Image (cartoon, rainbow, N blue to C red; front, top):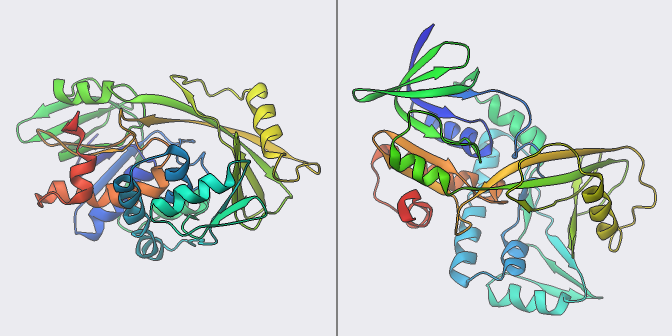
Length: 335
């Protein structure tokens, strides 16, 4: 069976779905192709947390300002898709609390240190599962449960051949395929860019029956609230793609989290594993790749934080808008 769409997005993680929402708001006709199941976006704590991310990564003030501006797109985006944005802030619990607090202040974030804990109101979050459900349920979005196995140029359009044998034709194709290998048929330049993406395996523990008021981080782990428990995470294993739960990794994270959060009453827990992609400089690849191809890829561990910014960047590239700050920083051809 053959079908046609103005824009085809391959991949239904948070970057692909957020881009689809932004494009439909702008009046574009969009089809999303995805095989379904968990992805790195669904296996996540939903952190929209530029403050501690910047302090712990020791980034420049310019990078901190970029991530803060990306966070500030979230109130409107969350209201649009109908999800709760939690803005209770986060805490850092560690022997270096004072130096973390100083770095936050130097980067332009609000912070205070009390009792060996650094607090900031500048980190927010959403719950990944309901947010993903809201994105997938967006009105006017056509989601096809299938896998794109080949892209074939067809004049000014692309033909995407799916695993089922169906074919989708589109004027523009947005690659939101996470850390997966390049789809056969892509241009050499697109393949070159995709080959730069480094996979990072992340594992977290979903623990039921516990409660925490806000995100809390410490050396080796974080604990984040969720509706019926907490999430303990997350590992960062570079160049690892396996999805099998790692009991040694789980034990290490729970022990690390237990140093700043009481886990003695741990009951039922579930291990979740996902693989995300990272560009060489840690910022996403978002924008035009040429010849009707675009990227929405490689946000490292900041997919939720950067999703609205990536969505606006890709939609702007399709519309031919002049490059603003996000577009320049995220340009996939910068490498």
